[in-house]
Image 1 (spheres, helix red, strand yellow):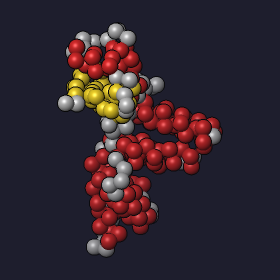
Image 2: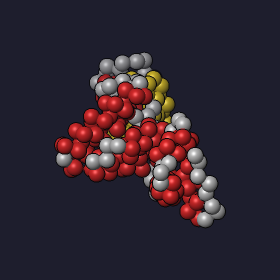
Image 3: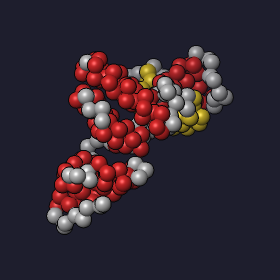
Image 4: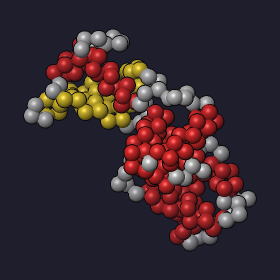
Length: 217
């Protein structure tokens, strides 16, 4: 049963948080109602703070916020509902399945192998529930950097515009940033650390599907 919230500030945060959660997670309302059926006041606090207040803060983008949350969940050994919930909201916020796995690998060096292994065991179940490939494809950033390296070595896996080839070959340094599970921005940097061009790479599964070039004028 959905709890009727009052008009208090906390209730307003809960309503905002609930709305945001439902946008991210299929059957999100039913999930929240089932999780907090016995303790609805706890649901109001937890959903209001996490998906109401914290999600509205502009300092972090959704991918980074979910990545930090998942790392904290691994560190705390929370392999129950917190991991299940943020696995789904992480995917909905633009994390690729491979990035979630990399977060667990990264966290293992600081939180210890027992907690990371317990998380990995639960990821097997969560991947299967959603029908994701296991193990997942390489992360978008890894796909993009491998593609750029092959182009620079004269071995492009797909036809590439000559201007893109020139931008990659001239660059002294490449800086790659995934902005979603399907897009990576690659900065082509010349000496002395000046941006010469930007590449927007659209990723599908484990390969680059489309490329956009933006050059400095």
